[in-house]
Length: 233
Image (cartoon, rainbow, N blue to C red; front, top):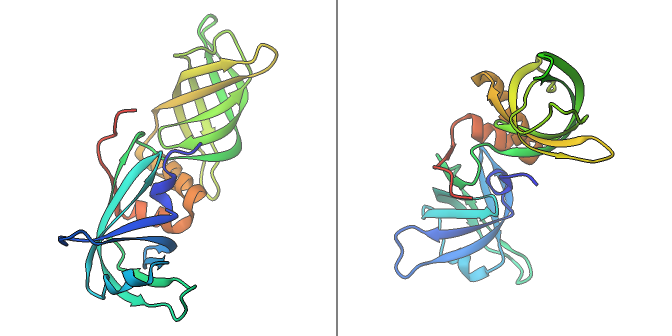
């Protein structure tokens, strides 16, 4: 399962009026989340009146993967013409989205085959084999690859990624977990130990696009999304 689904495109956001006493909140469904702004649909018709244009608000959302918050301002509200239809609250793009997450890097489910070279420690040689990658992020990956006696926790692999519209990305990694099928291949989790900053950013942008589209990738690359210290697992 991917790690930061909430950070990319939340389904629901809790809005709270900043410095309000008593506390004023409402829950909205996300209709649009881009670098041009956020649009929430609100089922509670009475809540629309509590969030007039110009109101400073705090947005919060999250799931098992992390918790996200931002502060922004209401730029427009539209009350519903029908009791059965939701109202709308439109927000300015947040200058920053802070997150608390379990992992440092977001990961996305993918389906790709990449060339790999495993260091055969006994014979001091590299063995080549394709890897079927199912999960990828800036910090590592999960993949299925042919089993080998040298493929154990701590093994070193050299990999090449071929992402759409870019030159190959070359990385070195260390196996942190390996599960071997007695009658088949091995499933491994690999942590990148050597990857340049530009290549890591390309992998991260690719993962964000896989999860949430180009809008989320733009927010991340522009620096509007920042991370706090990882929380304990």
